[in-house]
Length: 530
Image (cartoon, rainbow, N blue to C red):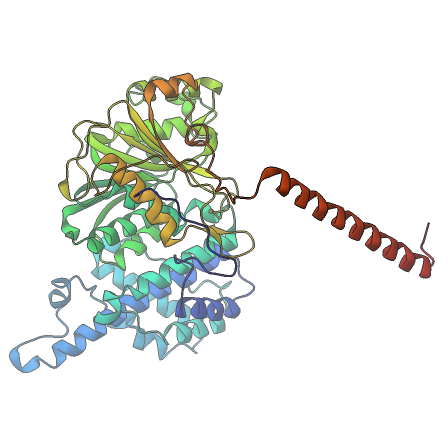
């Protein structure tokens, strides 16, 4: 059965997910030890650009050596076009890692890095305004900065072999996650946990078309989309990427995150943000994928009461959740699909007209699938969240690799994944590879673009008709529909089981009384008895 539910990982095991790292953790521990007295929010803008600089310099130096060996055949290692033709950044002499590392112990290392960053932006227009140029500021300890340069130098990031293995991408993504953890709630504003991104991407299956994220953070959705296309034999050029971000420093992180992987994307930035200054106003995307700010009460909704995007009802000025939902819908192509994260309240809230907007969307047959996730997945909040999947056309939509999906008109799939995942530390949980496969495969089998016969699984998934959702006042909480998990009968008669359990309980009561008396005796011995 395709939708069989994954059992929780045994205690003591590590989930097969983004938590499994190798040298990334070692590098992080060393870097973190170097700079104990700097805030994570500031430190990430020191270390991540340096990692990027090391990466592009390594790739450049490898190509430079190859061209130098071909001088006799007319190759020119100092011709920028030789590099750009292979999607390698041209790195001017003052920005090359070897040059900077030779001066790592000099008090002028900060200014030299600034000059190198300026030179890279000058010679690579697509990086204009992206690289920080404040390494020479007095508050930055130049001795520590030099030590960080030496530390990063130990890892070869830009060789052809390592680029193929996405070594730099792994380092960058791991560091983003660590910074998000260190910053807590603030960190969640730029980083969505990798396991959540993977569920969104693998359920949407963006093989071909336009992918859009209007609140793109550090660009993790785009990176995972490209990885998905590659992993499933597609061509990267078949996917066009569009995004928008209102926080300038986060936008810079996204640009770097994409640049290190050679991903070409149209990522816009403006302070007004997607609601008030939509940078892709005319875009109709095949896939919308997003993790918008949860329950944002300061989105300026009172200035947008008559906006054309509110087709299903005017969202409340005090909560942007359904403004985001309708913004996503507004940008969907006629057969487009959207997948996004929202707070659990969005599934059942009736206040300020949210229930009426949700009802209108359900009656318009736009809600394709709802997934309830376990708590403790996010750095920004410990509350559980849910995933929404909206489909413009459930009748004629195309699935993965252009395969036509079955007609799902009047149906919605509910998946309750709250019991999945494994703890990776005291406060954070991750979905395992098996969990992700179970959720995504259930959806693909249900919508008909994957082999297998869909079946409801009690306690995990259920396909529900719109008329049944009406009887629940258009509430979309999966737990209302999937029912209780079936409990296996152990074969022990009820009367025998109760006698055994009561006997065990009596033994525990007796042991509790014995321990209480022993504790009281010890207290008397210490003259604290009452």
